[in-house]
Length: 176
Image (cartoon, rainbow, N blue to C red; front, top):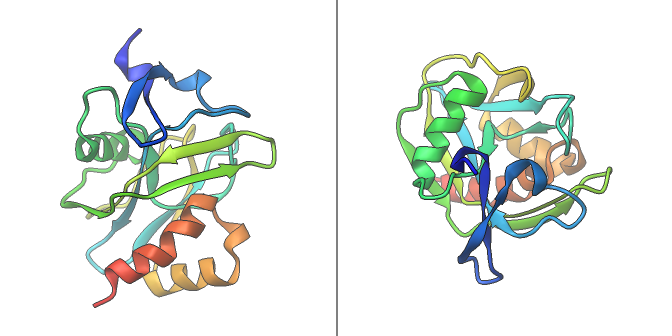
């Protein structure tokens, strides 16, 4: 099978334990696998939020961080972050910085689909507006970071569950 269609499965200790087809991985009993999340900041310090496409299998139409994805077998995580920025949002990326390297979560969508990921969190510098793939992103906004923190604190159900968990931790990491 083409490595572009595979996700990296992990054992309970977070070590690679095999691969599985990406499309067949997310269901009601999703195995633990490797992923990543990224929060992109523009030169003005605003963060890019995206709204997941309405056709997504899990959390369709939900507002979330800038982009997420899965590294391919043998692919460096920072390279995967850059690759997905281009594929999902048509963005070139400047500096990519790991911020929460050990982040792990499990969440269940209203449809029953489970996310079960070791999902390091990155920030990235971008200098352009996105041109999203409509199969991935239905809309986007540049938002002040303080407004994102308030959004998550006041209405965590209005964003993806991974974003609701990541933002308070990331806010501590970004504090001066």
